[in-house]
Image (cartoon, rainbow, N blue to C red):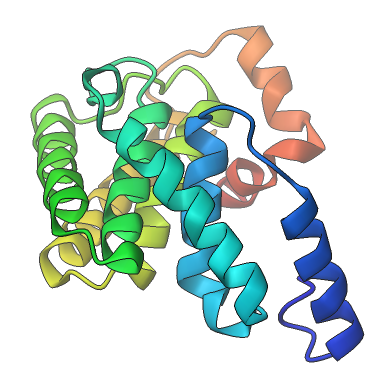
Length: 196
């Protein structure tokens, strides 16, 4: 990544790209990525870039808390990204209401995962990994100790479920040819690495 290289030219290039990339409307995945980027690399950003990105995060963070983005047992990747946005934005913006709502949503997600054993997207390695990513980010970088522990617990369970579902020798469920071909796609590196 441009910010990890230590090269000032690369850092300036990355900052210019971030400043030029506008979110014209709310996109749950893009806002979660923005919140995660600020949480993980915010201290490496130039002050002007960081301020601009925090302003964008403040503009969209509340939309992540709408009822449309509760974990419901289907299309769970969007709610997972939204609860990540709420927790990281709450911390970054000093907004306790966002953080509290994010923690509530994470508790709901973990409870559903414990009840059902799997997320609603186990039929797709793409979306399953897209649900795992926000949990892994929270487990590593969330400031709230309870959220960090819950995310780590859910991520471990989800990784185990993914391995049981997709591992050839342990496979307990048949998957469609369409989803098998998804596994061969280079864009699904995370799932392919989990299978190795």
